[in-house]
Length: 282
Ligand SMILES: [Fe+2]
Ligand SMILES: [Fe+2]
View (cartoon, rainbow, N blue to C red):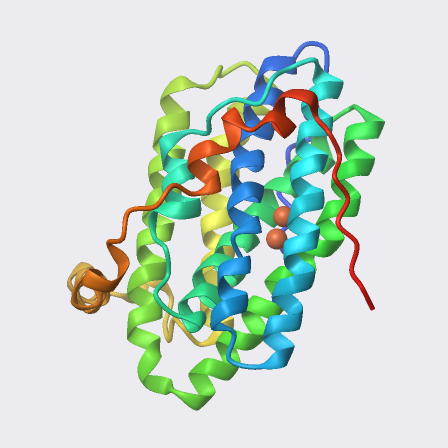
């Protein structure tokens, strides 16, 4: 990956999330991850649009891993004695609200930036949760998540090398993702208990994830200067350009369809926490 584990580690100052005291908060967090993992399964969509066998092979394997992650979060909810529940609208927007129109947008926005943010949130829970079994489940999942981010970064860099003209569009769409994370930060700042050893630090943690995402965008070459040096006008222009080109391709994307992310809470497999392992045939 273009950022090390150390660079992506936030200092919670020794604060702990305790499975007994913080059960409801942990369950809320796990339900956000659960939604993200269900949207992760939809990488199967990109199997159909993969530009080469390497990418197709990666997506096939990734889909299996994301299914395992769904099981992981259902398992953790069971350990906490909590039910699967809907995710926050901003998390839904970040995960599925901006369906990319191309493979290049998918690898940059959903894999490098999006899964990069998820990875940091997983590191954050691993570093603070006091439940060994929950930590062990998450530690297995992050190894796979790191590979997904790495693939996203590598293919974004490759795409920009081959088609430098893509940069503006990827930049505009990335700025929208970072805006949504900042909104989530201000949502949390108003609602979290100021006296909790971990929760009180979550807004600063989210701000830190945005800074890491910016570093990642700089290292991939999507950003050619730090955000602080970009004028508000050039940021707004990049976003407007990205959306105008999206609007041009809208007629193709308007076909109404129910997806797993609309129906997963009604799925019988959610109720019983049944594990349905998928094995790769070699
Ligand atoms: Fe995942
Ligand atoms: Fe992933």
